[in-house]
Every structure is written in C-alpha cells, then in structure tokens.
Length: 586
Image (cartoon, rainbow, N blue to C red; front, side, top):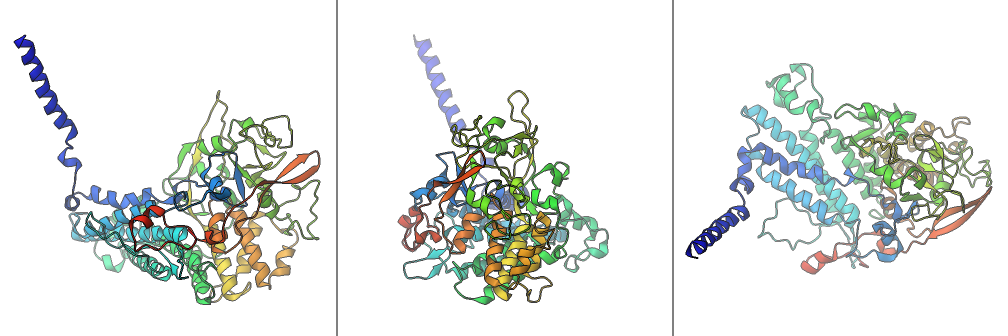
C-alpha cells in the first residue's frame, strides 16, 4: 500500500511540474520591444501587421446594402443593415477595431525602427530603415482614411469630426480617453504621413542598372546594395506611386459634398492629386479592352510574374488559386450559391452601345429585348436571362417558373432579381463535384480606373467638363476614353457624350454612372452614395420574365435614416470614453 501511495505521490509531483512547464510560456515567445533592436524579423513583423489588415485584401460586397444588389443569403450582414438593422452596436462597415489596431502596430514599429539593426553596414542600415518607415507612414495614412470613410461625421453641434489622431503606441497606462480630432485635422495628418512616405520611398520597387542611378542621398552605396533594399524583390509593398494614389482617394473623400459643402479648392486638390498618379502613367494612354476584365484569363492573370501588375492594376494582393468566389456566386445549375444578385436598377444604368441612356428617345432601347445592343459591360458584368456562363458556356434561364433552379426565386440559392453576378468570376472554374477546378484570383487594392474616375469627378466640379486646370486632359477626355475602351459610342463618336459635354450637371450624372458601372461589386457604391449625400433608399428592383414580357418587381426596400449618411462610432467606445462624441442620430 505504501508503495502505491509513493508512486501516486511521485506522479502528482511530476504532473504538477509538467503543468507548470506546459502553461508557462517560453521566454523567447514573450519578446519585449527592446528585443526588436537585434531582431529585424520581429521588428518588420510589426510593419507587416499593417499589410495583413488592409480592408481590400478581401471582398466585402457591401453593394448588397445599396440599389446595386441584393443577396439570397438572409443572414448577410449588409442585407440586414439595408433593411433597418444598422446600429452603433451592429455595424459590419466599422473600421474602428481593425484600422486602429493596424495603427497601433505601426506606431509600435515607429517607436523602435531607428534602433533596429537592419544591416551591419551603416548606409544600408539607413536605407532599410528609410524604406520601411516610408511604408509605415503610407499605411498609417491609409488606415486613417478608412477610419474617416467609416466613422467621420457631425456631432449634435454640427461640427464635422474625424477620429482620434494617435501617433504614439498606446501602452496599458495610456490615456485612451482621447477626443475626436476635427475632420480637417485628421486629413492634415493623413497628408503629413503621405508627404513623409513620398520622401522616403521610390516611385516603384525596380532594380537600377548602374551606380549613377543611385539617389544622391545614398551616394556611395552602389547599385547592388541599392537594389538589395529598393529593388524588384519588394514589389507589392507600398511605393511612392501607391502613396500618391492613397492621397488621391483621401482628397476625393474630403472634397465630396458630405464633407465639403462649398470649398472649390478641395475639388481642385482632389483633381490634381489624381492627376499626379495619372501623369506617372503617361496620361490617358494604354487603356485597353482587357482592362475592364482584369480578373479574367484574357487579361493575363495566369501569367503574372511575382509582384508584376497588369496595366489596369496599380496595387494588388497576392495571386492565389481558389474557387470560393465562383462557389458563392455561380448560379445553382453551375453548382454555385448565387449569393450576389444584381438589381434591375443597376441593369438600367448601363447605356445602349450607342452611348445613350436607355430612357433617352435616341437610344433605340426595346422593352421586349432589353439586353440587345447594350453597353458590352452589361453582359460581361451581369448574367442576364439567356446569358452564358461556366466552362461549357451554358445558357442560364432566370425566367419566372423557369425549368431549372436558376429561375427567379425557385430555390433558396436562386436569384431574387432575375440576375446573377458575372463580374470577378472566372468562367473557366468547374464546380462539378466530379471534376472541380480552381483558378487564379487576386484582389485589386487600387485600380487605375478608380483614379481616372476620381479625376473626372473632381475636375468637373473644379473647372467644368472641358477644362483640366493645369492638366492636359479634362473630365470629358477621361470619360470619353473610358467609354471608348468599353466599346460604348464607338460607331457614332459617342453622340450622347458630345451632346452634354458643356453641361456640368449632366456630366456629373454621367461621371457618377460610369463610376457605378466600372466599379460595380468592388465595394464602392455604398461609400459613394453617402459621400455624395445621395439617396440610400432607392428600392432594389428585379425583373419577372415571362416570354418577351419583362415586368419590374420590387425586391427589397431600403430602410435608412437621413443621419446614416455618416457611420457611427462603436457604442462600446462611447460607453467607455466620455471624451468621444457620437455622430448625430446614432
């Protein structure tokens, strides 16, 4: 008996020691910030956390919260906010946690980077430090932009507020009860960070060919060492070109009606900031038909080398093999769930191929064959009744009481509008369980078309349709080039555009429509409507099709209040910090 008790006692002792060893983290897994000084990988990890949190690394499809789309997924978060469930507690559009966490990591990086041993040789150490600080400044500016987009607004006193500007890492003893800076003060910090980024970063990460090309501030390091820090190996990370594009995005937001009641100078700045990006590309050149299907094999996605961008893409995520987009959005007969259903509202926004809106008497639109002779982007981006999809080019029937599960409201995964999303999807993906295939995809973080359209919008407001200020092209020039690329108005010199080219109001409407079409399903429409102070409550419509009869149907009401032009600060933050002011109405 004593022997048994002794064995049990030894087991208990060994187990207790083992538990302590199991539960006590190893010292090397609990690095403090000072450990980064001699651990460049750890220091760089703080910076890379910012890249991992970029919102456009994945698709949001917040189009479902607008007049562009609905979803057949009744649990879709954007469907819920569009139909009356948007609150300061339930906000799928919030960037408060993600972007503020990214800024915290970037501020931690800034607090250590000057002490980190990036390289043994001092000049190379300086180059690494400069480059990564430049990336950090651009990323911090970008996350502050996303915070403004989601949370800027007016308090009950009518003052336009931004977000707390945080430039130092916040430790456990930090004062978290910080007030929101004004909108303009937050914008100024964004611009300051982008100024620093552009000073520290090259236009692009590319190898140079000779020592003579080394910038004067790094004189003496030689081309090989310069390429080691600033060469092609780092493609995909933030550059001065990308920093300029972030500036163009931010200044357009600042110039928009919801944030700028009357200041012409802000529109001029937005136009010139976009022009700075366009000019780096050589102006309005190299716009090709493949640009409008950048996600497809025809645009060369399968042959993209590491870090190389197609002509349409300014900045993108990594390329990966998957079929998730197709699995979620192919129609049921192609083994998909048909989740994103474009609306009749969006379909009606596509003009005829001759460039005229379908409501115009000169358009030639036929109500009995509404998809014929339309803007080529319509059938490229939206799967209409009779359109083809999938590896076999199968015809899809979305009629009322149609013969397959693709028909209107036939089963849970059927379309609710009579349409399925086609854009972004690789038609060479096969979801048949007997022969499933993946294909290459990536997410565009910034497309050149976005910058072109930003310029057109701002230039039209600043100088009118035909004047480019000090730039060599006008809003009219940009819109003509974009429509020509799409195959619109090519047979009649785009007569509709020519008829309105001197009318600022009609040009504004056309620019907004082109933005809606070119950027559909990419997460722009919700933010655009709000920054324009436009209506959020357009009823989402569809089409009930029987033979050649196309009957509009109301699919889903939108239930927004006027104050929702601005998003809320999370209610949990308002409860914790009395210095935070909530946007009016929330």
